Structures are given as C-alpha cells and as structure tokens.
Length: 420
Image (cartoon, rainbow, N blue to C red; front, side, top):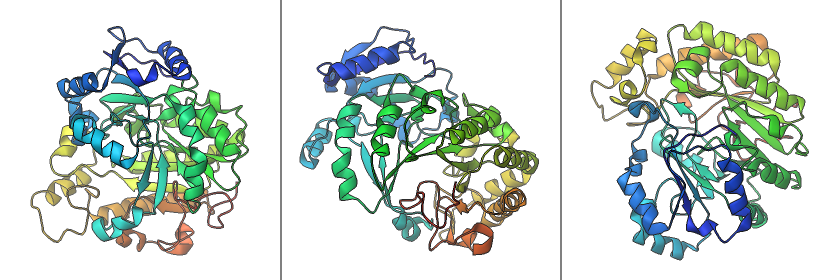
C-alpha cells in the first residue's frame, strides 16, 4: 500500500467487536505513520472531530484550492446496514456526519444517469456502484475528495450482502468499485481486491470494475479473477500527471500497470479524464495516445474534458499559467456573465465552450484512429451536441446505444466492445 502520513487516525468503536476488522486495521497501520496515536471514537466524538476540522467543506472543496501538503486524516469505520428508517433517525441525530460515509451509509449507490440529460444536458447511463472508502491519497488539484479518508473495514459483511443486491438488480451487469477513492492504493493490506475479485469470479453474468490512477497492481496479478474483473485507468498527459495530479504515478507508470494487468488476463480500459488543455496539449496527448495504444489493447476508451470548476474556482484550484491561453480566455469570457439560456451545465460540468471541446475531442479521436481503427470511443457525461460532432463509424457506436468505461451493460460479450 501507499505509505500514509496523516496527522490523526480515528477508529470508530463499531470496529472493536469484529476480530477481522481489527486485524485489517493492524495490517494497514503498518503503512500508516500518524503524528499522534490512533484514537477510538463514538458517533458523538466523530461528529465533534468533523465539526472542529470543518470536514463538511468537502461540499465545496477542491484539493488544489487548499494546496494540500499532508496526507488526509484517516477514519476507520464500518458500514451500519441500517434500515431507511434507522438511517433517517441517525442522520437527524448527527447531521454533521452526512458526508464522506461518516454516517455509516453509502455502500451501494444508484447513479441516475438518464436524468442527467433532462436536468443538465449530459448523456450517461443508469447503474449501481459499490463503495468501501471515501477520500484519496492522490492530490489532484481539481478533486473534491482529498481532505480526509473514511475507510470501511467490515468488508466480509459487505461481500456477504452482494448476492441479494446483484440478484435484485440483474439488469446491471457491471459494478463499479470504487470511484470515491482509489482503492488499490490501500492494497494488499486492505484486502478488498482479493475479496471483491474473488467474489465476482464466481458470478456468471456480472463483472467488477476497478477504477484507478495507481500503478500499485502487483497484488492483482496472481488473483484468480476468471476474467470477471475489468480495470479502468485514468490516464493523463505528462504535464497534467506531474503538475496537476499530484502524488499520482506518471503517464508511463500508469500505462505500464495497464500492460501488466492485461498480460495477467484482465480486461483493461482507458479514461482520458479530465483532459486538461495545458500549453502544448496536442503534442502531449498525441504522445500519451501513442504510448498507451502501443503498450495495451483496451476494449473501450472514454474521454471527458476538465469540468465542474465554474466561475472563479478554476483559478483557485489550478495554476492557470499551465493552461493554453486560448482556452483560458474562453473560460474567462464564459464566466463574465451568467446567461439564463446556458447550453452547458449551469455552474458545474462544462466549463469550456462547445466549439473548443469539439476541437479537442476531434484531435483525440483522429489520433486514436491513426493508431487503432477498432477500439470504441465514448464520452463521459457529454452533451448531445458533442456526440453529434462525430459519426457512428468514427466512434464505433452512437449516443442512443453505446459502451463506456462504467455502463451497466458494458461487459465482455457486448458486441459494441472490442473483444480482448
């Protein structure tokens, strides 16, 4: 696992009665060096800590805005698996714990992708996700999950509940785990990879998706996954990986991790997300594409432009001197006024105008097609107008029926995916 140097470690009292949870923490503490000894907390004490440290600012937090210089505090906790009524009562008693899994809820969430089109003009697909941690050891300037880590340790109980969950939602054949953290950075001490990969290896029709920027893959290579685990890497250009996605492996290290896992029999995918228009972005992204497609054979590539940083937040989070001046000027013009009829997502997703995003995606698609004529190419939460810039022949599919990194039917056997 990555070495972690937080100021504090908190252990929720619910952990202490389960020897498996205690053993998991003991393993992980071998790689954690806090300033102070770990402290056991109940819900009252945890709520007081969250208030004192202002953890609720995650609702408006971006790592770069506060220039994180230390690893986040660590909270070891357990999923409570309360009934809806019990959870509502808990949240009323502890309103300060309603975020970051601090209330013991959130092990599975429904992503209402189809509603995005009506509400925010973004194309996505419905799906269910799985979670066991909130927060990240990487320090990407644009991200909102960098101030503290909640790590759930009753994983065996979580896995025991998966049969019922998956059987109730049999239409969802791909289960993304975990996009609220980078779970493989905690391995192998955490043990989630072994449990989750092993579980899905025994399912007939469902697949696990691991979602990562990390190159910490050695623990995965010998697992008996039976090709029921898919691993998706977020791959970024050289300057982005080095200057903006701090504490992350380099572009080449991520690509080499992808290669190693593909050689170990895993299905692999690539996300160019977020694509950030730094100075020289064409040359850097061309080099990234060439290196990735020279080393691996992903079954799909998904793309997404830098987003979610409207108004002054971009300059608060990212060193804007890194950005292409044309793009920075366009961003500043967009936020000079607040038009009522925005065609991009209000105060959120799309922060660059359609024309520039279309230019960027056109460059990326053309470069991919120079190297690989088969791999399907998708967009993440993009507008119908962006999809309309490309033909089905260019992408391998269209917005009405497409595959992507984490779509519920984007699993091996889907005829729209490249066979690997």
